[in-house]
Structures are given as structure tokens and as C-alpha cells.
Amino acid sequence: MLRLLCVTAHPDDEAGGFGGSLLLYAARGVETHVLCLTAGQAASHRGSAGSDEELAAIRRQEFEAACKVLKVTGGEVLNYPDAGLDRVDFYGVVGDVVERIRRLRPHIILTIGPEGAITAHPDHSMASVFATMAYHWAGRSNRFPEQLHNGLTPHRAQKLYYATALFTLPDRQPVSLAPVTATIDIGPEFLERKIAAFKQHLTQKPLFPIFEKATRQRGTLETFHLAATVTPQHIQTETDLLQGVKED
Image (spheres, rainbow, N blue to C red):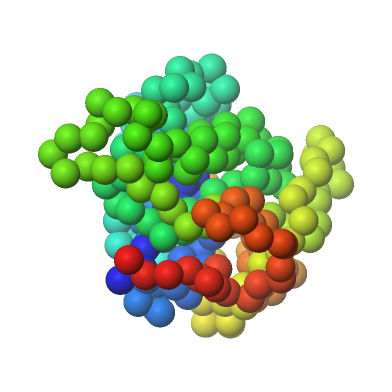
């Protein structure tokens, strides 16, 4: 079975940035996993939560509900500080992501671009940096060698993709997005389910109209940038993230 790992920063990123593709590849029989680095407890929209701890607990539940809608095989939320990923121990976070890569052994990894996506959120940028280094280091026996016991071995995912877009938000700080190299048509059914998945994040209800309007304007296409491959190659236009991927 082919396996896909998506690394994000906050609960709701999985639906907003990757929801259609997660649904599409799950429907094709791909084992899909989402690793979220924070519980989103610093969010501006807080629902009924009376504290950061309560909000984190609620958003973990919302993440789990969204993953069910997206047919995700496995979802995990780590405990790194929301709005603080740029100030955590770099080596420690990368090591945590490397351990998941070595355990799950994905064929492809998806994450956010280092610019921070169209919102340029610093946590998005750092999730990209951590995931990128973990992609490269997970396959090297001289990186985190203390993990290599009880059957855990180095693993090289065959491709690394950044989610990207063909538009920016004019009312935000400037952002330079990665060029599109892969365009995935998720179709109208998965578009609706992607929106439904985002709406599982009830604490973020004030964002629903904004998200749905932007998502419908974008249509059934999700776009990605191929950032790294295990086989050196010229850039090429893709319509399938699994193009050229070989099963174990």
C-alpha cells in the first residue's frame, strides 16, 4: 500500500490546505496520515473555551472529527506552542518528525511552503522548515541514530511537495509563493467534503464564510510545488502526486 504523510502547523490546516487531495488519495487506496505540530491554542477565534488548555482540548477533538471526514488513516497533534514554532528547539522538533517518518514510512510527504502559505503565518513557515529537514534527514543513518532500534530504520520518502496557490491575499503582508508544478483535480464531490471537513473546526466558525467563498472561487483544483525527489530530475508538470512513485 502506498502511504502519504501531511505535516501541518494547526488544526484546520489539514482541511484548508490539503483536504481535497487527502480525500482523493484515500479513495484511491492510499494510506494517509496527518501530523499537526500544535493544538492551535493561540487562535483568535476561541468558541466557548475559557482557557488555552480548554481550547487546545476542543481543537484536538475538532481535528479528529475533520480527519474522519477526510478519511485520514491516522492523525496526530503534537504539543508544540501555537504562535511559537519559531522559538522552539529546532533539532528536537525535526527529530520528532523524523521519528514519525521512519515509523510510518510514507512514499510522499506534503507540507506548507516556507513562505507560510497565502497567510504568511510564521507557524506555517516553521512547519515547512521542520518537515523539509525531516524529509532529508529521515533517510540518513547519521541523523538521530538513537532512534534506530527496535526495528526502526532510516527511510527516504520519494517526493516532498509544498502546497501552493495561484493567488495571494491583497490585504496581507507580501508573500512569494512557490511555482505550481502539480495540479490535482479533486472533483466537485471532494470539494464539498473538504468544506465539510473544515466546518468540523467549530471554534473557527467566524472563518467559515471566508473559507468557503475562497475555496469555491478556487474550484476543484489543489496546487503543489515539487520541492525534492530521491531521483534527480528536470522539473515537469504533474497531475498526480504519485506520478513516478514506486511501491515498496
